[in-house]
Figure 1: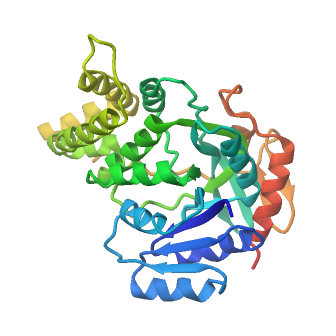
Figure 2: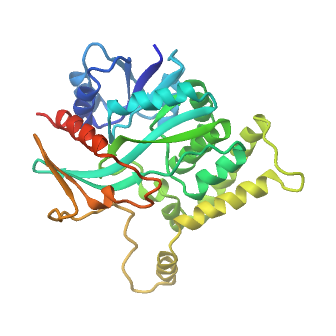
Figure 3: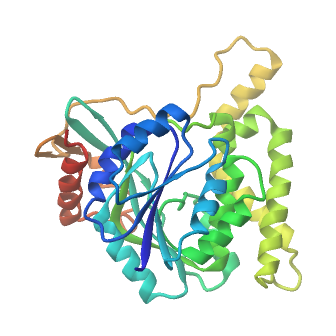
Amino acid sequence: MLLTIVIPTRNRPQNLAGQLKLFQRSPYPIVVADSSDVENAARIRQVLPKTICYRALDPGLSLYDKLEEVLRTIDTPFVLLASDRKITFPHAIEPLLEHLIAHEDHVTAMGYVLGFSSSNDVVDINRVVFFTPTLDQPDPLRRHYHLMQRYQSWSFAVFRTRPLIRALAQARRVVGPVFQEVLMMNALALQGKMARLPVILSLQSEERSFHPPKRNDPFYWFLDDIGSFFHHYIAYRAALTDFARELGIETQSHVHLDQIVDMIHAVWLRRNFDDGVLNHAARLLLGDAIPPIPGPHINIPSHAPSSRDLVIQKKQRYVWRDEVLSAEPRDEIVISRDEIDSVTEQLDLYFER
């Protein structure tokens, strides 16, 4: 057996039934790592087939704590992490796994993540969430740079198990979901290459994270408490540079590792910042009578399909928006009609009542 599917979940029993229907024909063992409260844990156990391994974990554990605890019990060389906030498609597993088997210097392989909303038997696939290209630079610091230059999360993908466990151990050295996630991603990038394949791995709903925006988004954390943000950044940077040195990664003779890491993260933060919102925040602090800053919530209004959208009627009505079909940059986002049909067929099973 090459791969184990791990589904970390917390208080989202409504999402698991459909996901498990998609995985019901999978040849790979499945572990549900559940840190729900008592009521939701009982609801989750009700929908689990007997063939699935259920791990009940302390609700107080962070995502990275529980992942490391579960992964240390897994003996397959590869693992798929499937989010309970996303719909993960089984058809994408094989090409991602085959890529890792064929490329020993790659530590993870991922497909595209699209965004959707659903209501009244209409599934509206309306945005491309994660798509940035493969990080295959030979130099680990260049992979670190390219990851942070256009940062997107690779948290849920197919991984080599050992590098993932090492990355999770690094993430647990810091506090807070922002720097834990970014440290995990960079610890992976420092260990090996990261592949993006032209398959749709998952669809992400508009469900909000359980973490408050001011601790789940670097910009809103900065707005809320600049001192706290940089205090945690310093601890994060120390963990990241310690790991780079542990791996034997060196800079050019005239460059200090802390300096290059700070410069790369300045690029990352600049891409997250909005001058208009910063000015608004400064005026609020000065006491101006202006509205508070709204949260970073996704709110895509529903509207009728246009002539450029693709509408597929099966058990449900699927609207593939032109914003997805013609997403830019075109050389990075390639979604074939076969891929659309495969995903649509699996969504019928996921939403089946």
